Image (cartoon, rainbow, N blue to C red; front, side, top):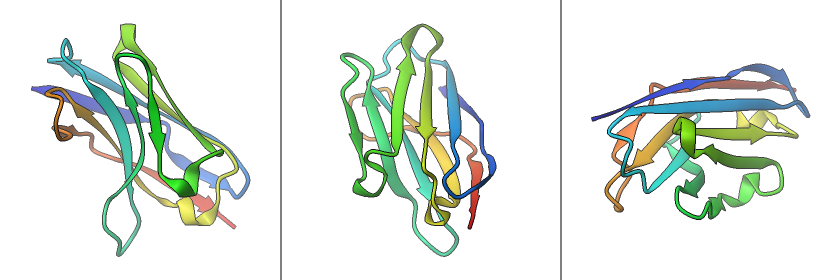
Length: 118
């Protein structure tokens, strides 16, 4: 079992920045990758960014490239999402997720609300 605890959401004006954090605990010795998804009202949950634990390779959905940066601290089993130049369309609940088996994402955090006002 893995537990994920997110923090850092909030309300920000358009053009502002927020930094999300997600700390993993439990069975963390076999982390393959961690990521962030988001879900806006009335929409399905969608991929935002991911990072591979070994090597640090990253991937992003097109709409956040150049604005969001995902990073990790292996020693703390923590992943971060630095969000800059935020737009109202970034408003959503952001979920942290982890893959410990080298396949699908296995566990999810409780979500943290990000609201960007225009």
